[in-house]
Amino acid sequence: MEVIDAIILGIIQGLTEFLPVSSSGHLELGKAILGDNSIPEESLLFTVVLHFATALSTLVVFRKDVFDIIKGLFQFKWNEETEFSLKIIISMIPAALVGFFLEDFMEVFFDGAIVIVGIMLIVTAFLLYLADMAKTTEKGVTFKGAFIIGLAQMVAMLPGISRSGATISTAVLLGVDKSKSARFSFLMVVPLIIGKVAKDLLGGEISFESSQMTAMGAGFAAAFIAGLAACTWMIKIVRQSKLSYFALYCLIVGLIAIAWSIWG
Figure 1 (spheres, rainbow, N blue to C red):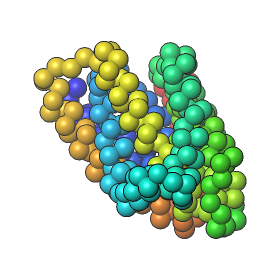
Figure 2 (cartoon, rainbow, N blue to C red):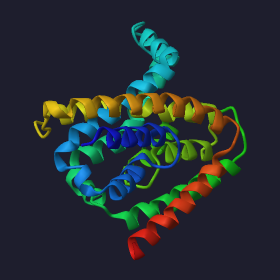
Figure 3 (cartoon, one colour):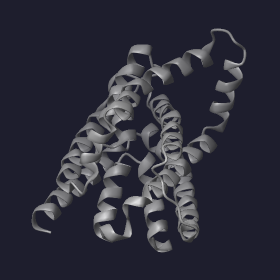
Protein backbone atom coordinates (compact mmCIF):
# COMPACT_ATOMS: atom_id res chain seq x y z
CA MET A 1 0.00 0.00 0.00
CA GLU A 2 1.29 3.45 -0.92
CA VAL A 3 1.76 5.99 1.89
CA ILE A 4 -0.39 8.57 0.12
CA ASP A 5 -3.24 6.02 -0.21
CA ALA A 6 -2.90 5.19 3.49
CA ILE A 7 -3.11 8.87 4.43
CA ILE A 8 -6.16 9.43 2.20
CA LEU A 9 -7.99 6.42 3.66
CA GLY A 10 -6.91 7.42 7.18
CA ILE A 11 -8.42 10.88 6.73
CA ILE A 12 -11.60 9.35 5.27
CA GLN A 13 -11.90 6.99 8.25
CA GLY A 14 -11.13 9.69 10.82
CA LEU A 15 -13.65 12.16 9.42
CA THR A 16 -16.46 9.76 8.55
CA GLU A 17 -16.30 7.76 11.79
CA PHE A 18 -17.75 10.80 13.56
CA LEU A 19 -19.41 12.87 10.85
CA PRO A 20 -22.79 11.32 9.96
CA VAL A 21 -21.83 10.21 6.45
CA SER A 22 -20.86 6.52 6.95
CA SER A 23 -17.18 5.61 7.34
CA SER A 24 -17.70 2.11 5.94
CA GLY A 25 -19.58 3.45 2.93
CA HIS A 26 -16.91 6.05 2.18
CA LEU A 27 -14.11 3.51 2.62
CA GLU A 28 -15.83 1.26 0.09
CA LEU A 29 -16.17 4.20 -2.29
CA GLY A 30 -12.54 5.15 -1.62
CA LYS A 31 -11.38 1.62 -2.41
CA ALA A 32 -13.38 1.64 -5.65
CA ILE A 33 -11.86 4.98 -6.71
CA LEU A 34 -8.29 4.05 -5.72
CA GLY A 35 -8.62 0.60 -7.25
CA ASP A 36 -9.02 -2.77 -5.53
CA ASN A 37 -5.33 -3.62 -6.00
CA SER A 38 -4.34 -0.81 -3.63
CA ILE A 39 -6.34 -2.43 -0.81
CA PRO A 40 -5.35 -6.14 -0.80
CA GLU A 41 -7.13 -8.77 1.30
CA GLU A 42 -4.23 -9.00 3.73
CA SER A 43 -4.72 -5.33 4.64
CA LEU A 44 -7.22 -6.31 7.33
CA LEU A 45 -4.55 -5.04 9.71
CA PHE A 46 -4.80 -1.60 8.11
CA THR A 47 -8.55 -1.51 8.85
CA VAL A 48 -7.81 -2.51 12.45
CA VAL A 49 -5.19 0.25 12.74
CA LEU A 50 -7.61 2.89 11.44
CA HIS A 51 -10.38 1.83 13.81
CA PHE A 52 -8.01 1.82 16.76
CA ALA A 53 -6.90 5.35 15.82
CA THR A 54 -10.49 6.64 15.84
CA ALA A 55 -11.24 4.86 19.12
CA LEU A 56 -8.20 6.55 20.64
CA SER A 57 -9.32 9.96 19.37
CA THR A 58 -12.72 9.38 21.02
CA LEU A 59 -11.03 8.62 24.34
CA VAL A 60 -8.95 11.79 24.06
CA VAL A 61 -11.95 14.03 23.31
CA PHE A 62 -14.06 12.46 26.07
CA ARG A 63 -11.17 11.87 28.49
CA LYS A 64 -12.93 13.68 31.35
CA ASP A 65 -16.12 11.64 30.86
CA VAL A 66 -14.14 8.39 30.65
CA PHE A 67 -12.15 9.26 33.78
CA ASP A 68 -15.35 10.11 35.70
CA ILE A 69 -16.96 6.83 34.59
CA ILE A 70 -13.96 4.76 35.66
CA LYS A 71 -13.74 6.61 38.98
CA GLY A 72 -17.45 6.09 39.60
CA LEU A 73 -17.25 2.38 38.82
CA PHE A 74 -14.45 1.88 41.34
CA GLN A 75 -16.72 3.20 44.07
CA PHE A 76 -18.49 -0.18 43.76
CA LYS A 77 -21.96 1.22 44.34
CA TRP A 78 -24.99 2.20 42.30
CA ASN A 79 -24.40 5.73 41.04
CA GLU A 80 -24.74 7.80 37.88
CA GLU A 81 -21.53 6.38 36.40
CA THR A 82 -22.61 2.78 37.05
CA GLU A 83 -25.99 3.46 35.44
CA PHE A 84 -24.38 5.06 32.39
CA SER A 85 -21.94 2.15 32.01
CA LEU A 86 -24.81 -0.35 32.16
CA LYS A 87 -26.62 1.57 29.43
CA ILE A 88 -23.47 1.45 27.30
CA ILE A 89 -23.31 -2.33 27.79
CA ILE A 90 -27.00 -2.71 26.85
CA SER A 91 -26.47 -0.62 23.71
CA MET A 92 -23.61 -2.90 22.64
CA ILE A 93 -25.61 -6.14 22.74
CA PRO A 94 -27.32 -6.05 19.28
CA ALA A 95 -24.16 -5.16 17.30
CA ALA A 96 -22.02 -7.55 19.37
CA LEU A 97 -24.38 -10.45 18.63
CA VAL A 98 -24.40 -9.71 14.90
CA GLY A 99 -20.63 -9.29 14.83
CA PHE A 100 -20.10 -12.58 16.69
CA PHE A 101 -22.63 -14.80 14.90
CA LEU A 102 -23.11 -13.18 11.48
CA GLU A 103 -19.70 -11.70 10.64
CA ASP A 104 -19.24 -13.87 7.53
CA PHE A 105 -22.72 -12.96 6.30
CA MET A 106 -22.08 -9.24 6.83
CA GLU A 107 -18.85 -9.40 4.80
CA VAL A 108 -20.95 -10.02 1.68
CA PHE A 109 -22.07 -6.37 1.85
CA PHE A 110 -18.42 -5.19 1.86
CA ASP A 111 -17.47 -6.64 -1.50
CA GLY A 112 -17.70 -3.61 -3.73
CA ALA A 113 -21.50 -3.45 -3.52
CA ILE A 114 -21.63 0.24 -4.44
CA VAL A 115 -25.38 0.13 -5.16
CA ILE A 116 -26.06 -0.95 -1.57
CA VAL A 117 -23.77 1.82 -0.30
CA GLY A 118 -25.71 4.39 -2.34
CA ILE A 119 -29.11 3.20 -1.13
CA MET A 120 -28.00 3.13 2.50
CA LEU A 121 -26.54 6.64 2.21
CA ILE A 122 -29.97 7.84 1.08
CA VAL A 123 -31.51 6.11 4.12
CA THR A 124 -28.95 7.91 6.30
CA ALA A 125 -29.95 11.22 4.69
CA PHE A 126 -33.59 10.58 5.61
CA LEU A 127 -32.70 9.78 9.25
CA LEU A 128 -30.57 12.92 9.57
CA TYR A 129 -33.32 15.09 8.14
CA LEU A 130 -35.86 13.70 10.64
CA ALA A 131 -33.45 14.23 13.54
CA ASP A 132 -32.74 17.81 12.48
CA MET A 133 -36.48 18.56 12.55
CA ALA A 134 -36.90 17.11 16.07
CA LYS A 135 -37.61 19.41 19.00
CA THR A 136 -34.86 20.25 21.49
CA THR A 137 -35.20 18.54 24.88
CA GLU A 138 -33.10 18.02 28.00
CA LYS A 139 -33.85 14.31 28.50
CA GLY A 140 -31.18 11.67 28.97
CA VAL A 141 -30.86 8.12 27.62
CA THR A 142 -33.08 5.53 29.34
CA PHE A 143 -32.34 1.79 29.56
CA LYS A 144 -35.00 1.08 26.93
CA GLY A 145 -33.62 3.90 24.79
CA ALA A 146 -30.09 2.47 25.10
CA PHE A 147 -31.26 -0.83 23.62
CA ILE A 148 -33.13 0.89 20.77
CA ILE A 149 -30.06 3.01 20.01
CA GLY A 150 -28.09 -0.25 20.06
CA LEU A 151 -30.44 -1.65 17.40
CA ALA A 152 -29.70 1.42 15.28
CA GLN A 153 -25.98 0.75 15.72
CA MET A 154 -26.56 -2.84 14.59
CA VAL A 155 -28.30 -1.68 11.40
CA ALA A 156 -25.43 0.76 10.85
CA MET A 157 -23.08 -2.18 10.34
CA LEU A 158 -24.33 -2.10 6.74
CA PRO A 159 -22.00 -0.02 4.52
CA GLY A 160 -23.60 3.32 3.77
CA ILE A 161 -25.58 3.60 7.01
CA SER A 162 -23.74 6.11 9.17
CA ARG A 163 -23.17 4.70 12.65
CA SER A 164 -23.01 8.11 14.29
CA GLY A 165 -25.85 9.39 12.10
CA ALA A 166 -28.10 6.42 12.88
CA THR A 167 -27.43 6.35 16.63
CA ILE A 168 -27.59 10.11 17.15
CA SER A 169 -30.73 10.41 15.01
CA THR A 170 -32.41 7.54 16.87
CA ALA A 171 -31.54 9.05 20.24
CA VAL A 172 -32.83 12.49 19.20
CA LEU A 173 -36.05 10.98 17.81
CA LEU A 174 -36.49 9.21 21.17
CA GLY A 175 -36.46 12.67 22.78
CA VAL A 176 -32.89 12.65 24.12
CA ASP A 177 -31.01 15.95 24.39
CA LYS A 178 -28.88 16.44 21.26
CA SER A 179 -25.58 16.93 23.09
CA LYS A 180 -26.25 13.88 25.27
CA SER A 181 -27.17 11.92 22.14
CA ALA A 182 -23.80 12.71 20.55
CA ARG A 183 -21.90 11.90 23.76
CA PHE A 184 -23.66 8.54 24.15
CA SER A 185 -23.22 7.71 20.46
CA PHE A 186 -19.46 8.26 20.49
CA LEU A 187 -18.80 6.54 23.83
CA MET A 188 -20.95 3.48 23.08
CA VAL A 189 -18.81 2.46 20.12
CA VAL A 190 -15.43 2.54 21.87
CA PRO A 191 -15.80 -0.86 23.65
CA LEU A 192 -17.02 -2.43 20.39
CA ILE A 193 -14.06 -1.09 18.42
CA ILE A 194 -11.58 -2.24 21.06
CA GLY A 195 -13.27 -5.65 21.18
CA LYS A 196 -13.17 -5.96 17.38
CA VAL A 197 -9.51 -4.93 17.29
CA ALA A 198 -8.66 -7.53 19.95
CA LYS A 199 -10.65 -10.23 18.12
CA ASP A 200 -8.90 -9.55 14.81
CA LEU A 201 -5.45 -9.41 16.40
CA LEU A 202 -5.97 -12.63 18.35
CA GLY A 203 -7.78 -14.41 15.53
CA GLY A 204 -4.61 -15.10 13.57
CA GLU A 205 -6.15 -13.82 10.32
CA ILE A 206 -3.90 -10.76 10.05
CA SER A 207 -0.71 -10.79 8.04
CA PHE A 208 1.95 -8.13 8.49
CA GLU A 209 5.08 -7.19 6.61
CA SER A 210 7.69 -4.74 7.89
CA SER A 211 7.44 -2.86 4.60
CA GLN A 212 3.90 -1.86 5.62
CA MET A 213 5.08 -0.08 8.76
CA THR A 214 5.42 3.39 7.21
CA ALA A 215 2.02 3.25 5.49
CA MET A 216 0.37 1.90 8.65
CA GLY A 217 1.88 4.69 10.74
CA ALA A 218 0.84 7.35 8.26
CA GLY A 219 -2.70 5.99 8.11
CA PHE A 220 -2.93 5.81 11.91
CA ALA A 221 -1.72 9.41 12.35
CA ALA A 222 -4.09 10.69 9.65
CA ALA A 223 -7.09 8.85 11.13
CA PHE A 224 -6.25 9.99 14.70
CA ILE A 225 -5.84 13.69 13.81
CA ALA A 226 -8.87 13.73 11.53
CA GLY A 227 -10.86 11.90 14.22
CA LEU A 228 -9.99 14.49 16.88
CA ALA A 229 -11.18 17.29 14.63
CA ALA A 230 -14.32 15.51 13.44
CA CYS A 231 -15.42 14.36 16.90
CA THR A 232 -15.12 17.87 18.36
CA TRP A 233 -16.80 19.41 15.32
CA MET A 234 -19.65 16.92 15.32
CA ILE A 235 -20.64 17.71 18.91
CA LYS A 236 -21.07 21.37 17.95
CA ILE A 237 -22.97 20.49 14.77
CA VAL A 238 -25.51 18.32 16.60
CA ARG A 239 -25.99 20.95 19.31
CA GLN A 240 -26.63 23.64 16.69
CA SER A 241 -29.07 21.46 14.69
CA LYS A 242 -27.17 21.49 11.42
CA LEU A 243 -27.60 17.83 10.47
CA SER A 244 -29.65 18.77 7.41
CA TYR A 245 -26.42 19.79 5.62
CA PHE A 246 -25.12 16.25 6.03
CA ALA A 247 -28.50 14.86 5.00
CA LEU A 248 -28.16 16.71 1.69
CA TYR A 249 -24.55 15.53 1.33
CA CYS A 250 -25.49 11.87 1.94
CA LEU A 251 -28.37 12.15 -0.54
CA ILE A 252 -26.09 13.55 -3.27
CA VAL A 253 -23.28 11.04 -2.65
CA GLY A 254 -25.80 8.20 -2.49
CA LEU A 255 -27.26 9.15 -5.86
CA ILE A 256 -23.76 9.50 -7.35
CA ALA A 257 -22.78 6.06 -5.99
CA ILE A 258 -25.87 4.46 -7.54
CA ALA A 259 -25.19 6.19 -10.87
CA TRP A 260 -21.52 5.16 -10.69
CA SER A 261 -22.43 1.49 -10.16
CA ILE A 262 -24.91 1.51 -13.05
CA TRP A 263 -23.04 3.56 -15.66
CA GLY A 264 -19.48 3.75 -14.32
